[in-house]
Structures are given as C-alpha cells and as structure tokens.
Image (cartoon, rainbow, N blue to C red):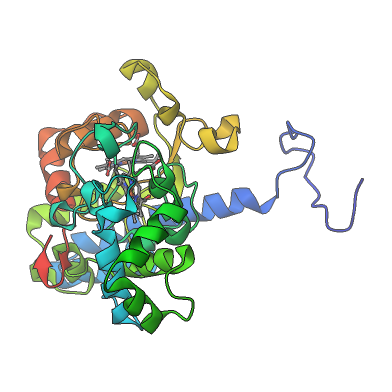
Length: 360
Ligand code: HEC
Ligand code: HEC
C-alpha cells in the first residue's frame, strides 16, 4: 500500500528484491561518505604537491580532520574522581570472580595495553576463552562493546565476564555478599551512592573508571593538533597510505575504529582459507541471526594497537605486519610493497598514547 511517505522509485532503478523498499536515502548516505573520503584524499594529495610543503600538508590534514575521518583522543575530565578511584579498585578486585582468582585486570592489565597479550584469555580454573580480548583503553569511545556489539554500554558489558562460567564464573548475589564483608567498601560506597553496595553501583563505578581510560598525547594526535614536527616523514606517509589504501573507510573516527561494523573477508574468503570455523567467527550473526551479518565484527579501534598484540578476533596475527597484510589481502584485495608496509606500521605505532602522563 502506498502512503504519502513512501518514496517513489524511478522506473530505471533496480527492482527491490525484498518486499519492503530500502529507504531511498541509504544510497545517498553511503555515496556521500565515500565521496567525502575521496575528496579528503584528493585534497590531501593536491595540497601536498604545492610548494610550501609543511604548511600545506598540515592544512590538508586539517581538511581531512574536519571531515571527521580522525580526531584526537580528548583528555578525560570526569565529574567524580572518587567514583573513578572506587572503580579502579573494583576493576582490580579478584572478589568479582567465583573463587577469588580473577579480576578484570587479569585479562585487561593496564600495564600491557589494557589486554592480556594472549590469543585467548584464561579465566577461572584455567579455562580458555574463545575470542581475543580487546583493550579497555578508550573503550568508552566505541559505539558498542564486544566484537559482535552485543553490549550497548560499558555498564551492560560487565554482566558478560562476571557471569560467564569460563571468565569470572560469579553472580551478583555472591559478589555483593563478598564486597559487603570488606572493611572499607561499605563506607566508601555509601559516601558515593545513596543505595550503598548494589550491582548497579558496582557497574557504575567500574564503567566510570573505564571512561577515564583515555589515552591522549600520541604523536598522531599531536600532529592532528597542528604540530607538524610530531610526525616523522615515514609516519606521515603511513597516514597518507592509510587514507589512500582505504583503511580509513572502516577504521575511522576518534578511535580509528569502533564506530561501525565491517565484514572480515570483504574481498577474499578469510575463513575458508584459515579453516576450523567456530561460532566465535560468526561475529554479529551470532547475535542477530541475520545472514547479512555473518562474519561481521565491530571494526576494532587502532589506538595503541602496537601494544595489543596478538590481533584479530581469533588472535591469529602476532605482528602488525601480519595484520596489515591480512587486511590488504582480505579487505582490499591488494598486496603491499615493503616500503608501504613499513610506513603503515610506523603510522600505527604513532597511535600509542599516554595514560596518566606516561606512554602506554
Ligand atoms: C577471563 C578474561 C576476562 C576477564 C576476567 C574480563 N574480561 Fe573483558 N573481555 C575479555 C574478552 C575475551 C573480551 C571480548 C569478548 C567478546 O567480544 O565476545 C572482553 C571484552 C571486554 C570489553 C569490550 C571492549 C571492546 O572494545 O569491545 C570491555 C569494556 C571489558 N571486557 C571490560 C571488562 C571488565 C570491566 C571486566 C571485569 C568486570 C572484564 N572485562 C573481565 C576477557 C576478559
Ligand atoms: C572493509 C573494512 C576494513 C578495511 C578496509 C580495513 N580494515 Fe582493518 N579491520 C577490519 C575488521 C572488521 C577487523 C577485525 C577482523 C577480525 O578480527 O577478524 C580489522 C582488524 C584490523 C587490525 C587488527 C586490530 C586488532 O586489534 O585486532 C588492524 C591492525 C587493521 N585492521 C589495520 C588495517 C589497515 C592498516 C588497513 C588498510 C591497509 C585496514 N585495516 C583496512 C575492517 C577493515
């Protein structure tokens, strides 16, 4: 049935496959995005060729930035540093696990890039997980949490590990009971929360702490802020290549990732080549059961990526070189000359920021 709001499709356009017509603007939105990216690259290349090189390229980068392909990580300012302090304590507290052996930090150590540097994490009783642990640094900047995006907020995310029999194997009744026995938590909580120790308040404190885990100050961010000297020539070339190869069509925004879903194996069949497909490989399909979402993952953020090896949801790449060449082959259908690879690696290394004033 036609209503006034149903868009008219010109006769020349392809007939719709499904019963419901796609919103007509979707094509425009995607088209505009691609156009903006191309324009940014073009602008950059054009301006770079002109005489006053340094000034020009900084200006060109500003053009890119204004199109929102990348933005510096903002320094974090939280209204309540006391909640951050409480959340930090809880994040490191093994009593959140069934047998007091595992804390959040076991798998997300702040000293090792917010990850455990393992292919698969080890939970209570030495149990192995089935997917690689992403970093908690800057995780508050991602649009959803987890590889398949199944948690909308950092608060909701916490239910996952706490209740997972292979991770912390606990439940709220047990955890709250243990925290209430502690000599200092009851007072600490009641100073900050009217209800004292509750599941919601534990989640609020941990999520508030996680939101404080911003890592500003990378050389890339200094460069974006206009300090041309913060970037070596090779890092700058790496960024150019990152744009011109099309990496930024997926890895974009403040976290250079974490703001959209992407299919692993857009061009080549990554999973057929790798073999041993497991449920964890299904990605977003696991959650939605929509075949269009098969092998789709939230595009991982690339901030601090030099610290978060091994790479991919399956932890299959140990080095940035390996990860980049897999990306080239399966996402872009391209192989890379050695000097491009070296420049891209240099660029990715320039994304390492600082936490509490020290480099990660
Ligand atoms: C046994 C290891 C382990 C423990 C313990 C653990 N995590 Fe994780 N964490 C993981 C793994 C593995 C994933 C990825 C799971 C997935 O995407 O399906 C993850 C994902 C996350 C994410 C999502 C990051 C992103 O970019 O999507 C956050 C945030 C996080 N964990 C915080 C926590 C907090 C807070 C705790 C403590 C309450 C915790 N984790 C305990 C292993 C662990
Ligand atoms: C079509 C979208 C897309 C393009 C283009 C793309 N990537 Fe990715 N990238 C992804 C997805 C999706 C993943 C996660 C794949 C997985 O874990 O199975 C990923 C993972 C990565 C990782 C591993 C990150 C981690 O923490 O595990 C790196 C590094 C990376 N990409 C760099 C690049 C570079 C460099 C380029 C350009 C040469 C590029 N990507 C192009 C979508 C893309």
